[in-house]
Length: 566
Image (cartoon, rainbow, N blue to C red; front, side, top):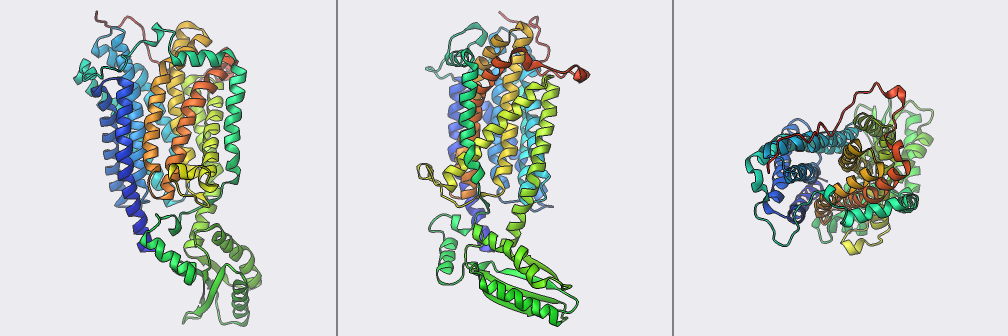
């Protein structure tokens, strides 16, 4: 098992390096395309790398006192690159817009701070809220990934709010240096009604009910396969073909017992193991195990004190297969009660497979708790930020739609093997047990990112014009390209991880990438404007009995009498 564990660690490190080699250059190219200038494109990448390195240092310190999962480095890197670039992208873009409006460098930084910086702060809070749910699960895997992702998200927010304004102040207009000649320059969105995003939002809002119904139906249909999701833990069979440990395991499985490397141990604790009742129970249990085709080679031993007995058996299948998990559950729920009923013995089952069954059961138990906490805290945050009871309800429904669709596509590609060869993915019998809850926590936070940025621009415009349709069109038009660019960067980072050799990382990268694509396209481009067009002024409805809530404005005070330059 130690050799197999080292192999998983080494393979994940190799996958991480490969993912960085793919994701970072693609992210830089997308940033250049978004900003049209090499210097502006490099700033978000610098901020993200600072966040990643700092968070890795925090993880190193935490790891001195606590055991962390070997996936934590991968998670810190991909989440740090994703949110670090995201936050910087929105702030830099807002700064450039304010300079284009004629404000001085200092005034532009200040106005970006009054809007985009606040949105980053609340978006970071939404990400942390989603990840806090992982800390509720009493599992090393979840707590490791949760601590790693929370630390890098917090550092990314701090870097975006402190380091980034300092860089903008130092660079000033040199941020647009090294322009790419054939790329278009930044334009103010309120000065034009042309462009692809304006066309899309007008088209959607022309028939909002149809747009809403069709897009929601597509996501629900994509989510349906999620009901057949099978949870499990990656075994040796998911290592790359040709791996030494995998070859050795396959030889053991073919010529001996596949469970030879991971025996199942049944511990019998009784005042007197040699008593007739306990010995008869052990004999009965041994017979039941021998009659089960999933078990092989049963043996029983007793300690010298005569108060403990150990019944050892081997599984005839992969210890991490669904059949092995079912065998452990039969052993616990059927065989042991049938054999030891009426005795004073305390009987426990241990071993690798039993530990993983326990982990899956813990995840199943805590999933509704995590969902409730994350949804509840997110509802409160959005209620405070937007002073509307409708906005948080819609946000929760939309995020559940995108996450559900991502679950369904995971099942289609990995469990059913539809399209897996196209991407070079392994077909697996199960989805990683820790992944659905982790995917929910990460994506709920990241989805809130886009939601806060988009709705903050819509509400900012709504406060100036009072027109719901015009404000929605402006919000989508002004954030469409930047949200799409941010989403493409996230997809590049996540897909870099998905192109590795380990099935868990393939599933995580694919699931996160697909969820981001769905959220940035169908959700933000269609469902958000369509639903806001249908609801009209009701979007901002707040019951009178909630009017005592404090007013927290992301938009800040944007009076146009600031310092300008001709």
